[in-house]
Amino acid sequence: MVTRPRGSYRKTAQRREEILDAAFEVFSRTGYAASSLNEIARVVGMSQPGMMHHFDGKAAMLQAVLERRDREAGELLSGRTDLDFLRGLIEIAEQNRERRGVVQLYSMLAAEATSADHPAAAYFAGRFEYVVAGTVNALEEAAALDLLLPEVDPRESGRNLVALTEGLQLLWLHNSAIDVAQSVRSEINRLLTTSI
Image 1: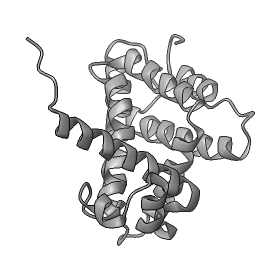
Image 2: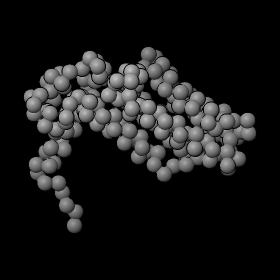
Image 3: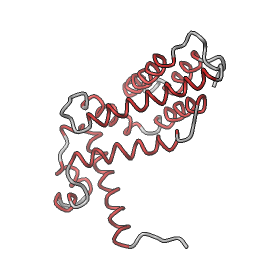
Image 4: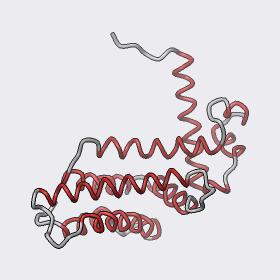
């Protein structure tokens, strides 16, 4: 028997998602530092105290927005190894073509979060560490299968691949003719004894 969320819980969950949508819109437009709780409340159509019933401040909203974005990417990469993981990175880049606002918000926040006192500083440091480690691991797995060119250092190449992807996304925000997914695919193929 499948149980469904009770009425008030379902409404609360739906309202939280609406608040996150509004926070995403405001953060995307003005960045985290320049955004205000009043503006988010106005966009979602509720009072600030009512909104604070669901989130304990702007930093908590930011954390939830970032976690929602990462949950989607995490699901796509879950359980994937070696070349399949690397294909997943290309798939994420392809999906991002249709999510300009998400990429714009992410890029803006990643730059803001280089300040140690930014509420997302630890989040981005951990995220970069996680993504680089996953990419390095996939390249090491490819090397164990003799799919990586012998002169390629998985650690250096993994870090460089993440940096390339991040930089290409920023360039794409300024010039939508840039094909991030194809450029990432080309760089990965340059490291391999095969093509993906």
